[in-house]
Length: 366
Image (cartoon, rainbow, N blue to C red; front, side, top):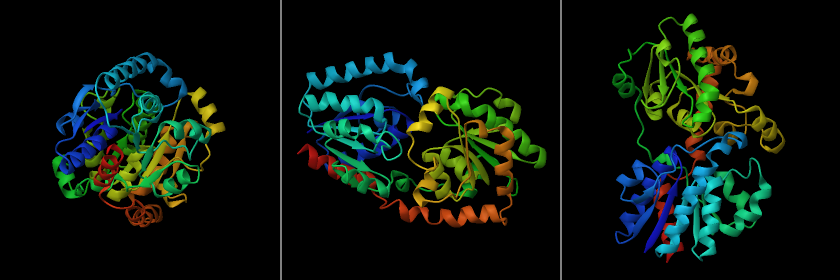
C-alpha cells in the first residue's frame, strides 16, 4: 500500500508524524512518502520536500508565496504521476491542499483531509469545490462533523490531536527554564508565520514592558525557537521555549488566535487572544467571517471566556490592561477562565485521534 502524506507547517508536521506512526503500527508494510518537516522524517516518511516556511496568514500576505507554492504543486503532481498511490492524506493547510486534492482526484486517487478547513467560519461558498475533490474529512472539533454532514461532505469526528500529547508539568517546565517558583511569568505566543510575527510581536513585546512596570520581578517566556526573528527580543530579558513548555510555565499569556489557545486552556493558563492582519485582509475578513469569536476556546464553549483584541484594538496598552488582572490567581477574571477551561477536555473528544485517522485512512486506501 502506498500513501502520500502532506503537511504545511510545524503543527501539521507534528500531527502528520503521529498519524504516520499510527499507520505504520497498524500496517508496517505501508510505504508513506510526501512533503513535510523533520517530525514526519523521524516518523518514517520518505520526504520529497518541505512546505514549511511558505505560510502566510491572509489574502494579501499570501500573494508573495504563490510562486513557491506553484512549484511545490508541480513537484507533487509529478510524483503522483510517476509512482502508484492508493491514498493521499492532507493535514490542515487547506488553501494549498485543495489544489493537491484536485490533482489526486483527477488521477482517481481517494483523498482524506485531516483537520478540516474552517468553512464554518468563513467561505462556506467553497464547499462545492471542496466536496468534489475530498473523499472524506477527519475533523477535530465536535461541531464540525454535523456541519459537513449537513452539506453533503463525508466527515468523521476523531478527537483533537492535542489530547494525545503528554502533559508538561508546571514544576518541570519552570525548572527547565530556571524560573523561581513564586515569580510571575508571562508567556508570549506570537505565532510561527512570518506575517503573524511581523503583525503581533511588536505589540506583545511592548505589552510585556508595560506589565513589567507593575510587576518588576516579571519573567517573560516566548514560544519561539532560536531561529525565529524577534526584533527587540533582547530588550525584554526573555527566554525562548516550545509552546507546550511556555504554556505550562506561564501564569498568564498573550497569544495569537489558533490552536495555541487550546494548548493554554488544557494547561489551565489564563490568557488574552490577540490578532492583527494586513488592513486589506482585515477589510475582506470583516465581510466574510461568519462566527462571533476568533479564539478556539470561545468558539468551543460558545461564549466569551477569553478576551479577544483584534486589529487596532490589539495595542500594547490594551493587551497589558487585559492581561494584568489575570495575574491575581484569586481574582474574578482568572478564576472565571480557569473554571471554563475545565470544560475544554471533555469537548475535544477521544484521546486517540491519530489511531482513529489511521484506521480511516487504511479503510479508504483498501
